Image 1 (cartoon, rainbow, N blue to C red):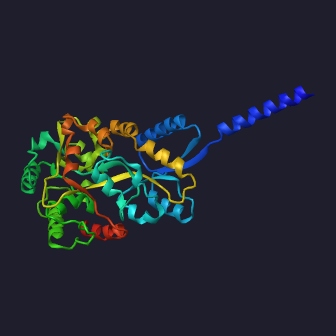
Image 2 (cartoon, rainbow, N blue to C red):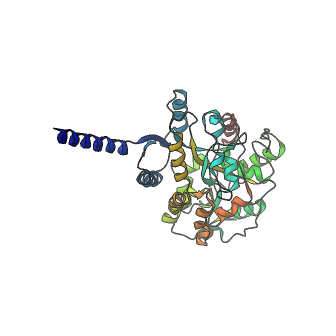
Image 3 (cartoon, rainbow, N blue to C red):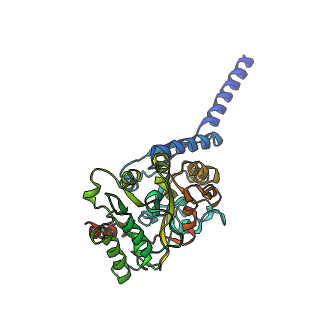
Length: 364
């Protein structure tokens, strides 16, 4: 009888021991992202769970209306433990996010990336990538351009390229695309002290110059001339010589372009160009902060950053991981060079309202 009781005790002890070992703490992680990005995220999550057997990650993919849905989740106290966020929306969620200032090492990330994800002296997200606008150049149309060019040269090049249903340059009626023109003349939306400067002389000069690409010089296609196509497709169809866009277009253009092309910086002007930043944040009300911090550390590691870098979709904010771009393929190192002379976009909690108003002015 004692032997049977002892055997039962051992079995129960074994089962409860297994149960303790296999119980996991679940954290919820939200992100937007393309099919390629989601594939990488799932790979990173699987690797993380393998190395941290006591933690499981529930992935909440929100491909559309991301911040509207995140806003509702915060309002209902059901926000994810970890969330992907960008600098443009960061101030709105200042009170909802954990200060992660003690989670970065000196020299680990570009300083502009850390600045972009900081607000009121708090680092509210660990950077994943930096984003800037550069020109994709069809060299069969416009030839080779000096890196030390200016806006007069840009205008001259685009005018000479405009002929036979080919436009010299692209135009999109949103302030995001106009911003390099504003900073060239020393303007912007906010100055470094967050004073509104969109209506000053320099900013108006930049906006007017940008609009004149279509209205006065007729070297950029209007929305009606783009029609059902896109500017990216027009560039690939050899109908645009200079196409202003970001790193995210690099893989598609690399794959589809059947002509000679390269990337070049936007001409340097009176003020530094703006860069935007995205990264990983933690909800202040998370009940699993230690696990969330482990996961954010894993997401922002050099190893994870290199996964993203290899897709060609992003410029990693992790300095070591970004070095994969430091090569001569299509002058790809420009994506790194522009960081040196850029600053993070100054934003406020009213940024979206201000931008919506400005965008109406850019409609032609």
